Length: 132
Image 1: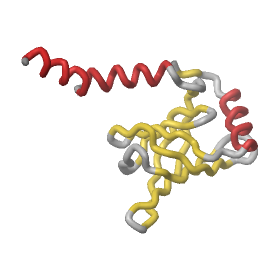
Image 2 (image 1 turned 90 degrees about the vertical axis):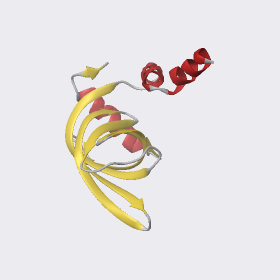
Image 3 (image 1 turned 90 degrees about the horizontal axis):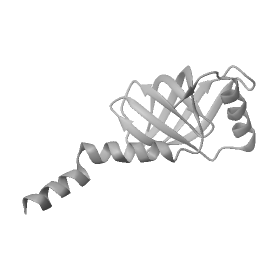
Image 4 (image 1 turned 120 degrees about the vertical axis):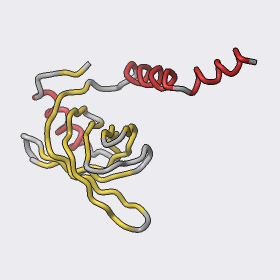
């Protein structure tokens, strides 16, 4: 009985979350790059659109990590807007919250146009430091 309880704890405790995150890292589709920019976030909750802002700290072709002024929940769909140093100068995209821990969030971009994907590819190519 004690062994069975310990196995259940191992499958659902902090160690399980660490294993899950490590597995997620290994299956990333795109490299991540350091990126520091202000990001505006809009989220629609309970019939009201709320605005948050924060700082992006990493970016990839298909998403970004940021620290925000408020908390979001995994699965929430948001609108992101952030400046970039190449044309068109600003990216506006819908994203889903894939990770949230306190004020830190990871976003996956949704419904990205070919032009936006190409812009993100060029942005990532211009950034020198790859995060591992």
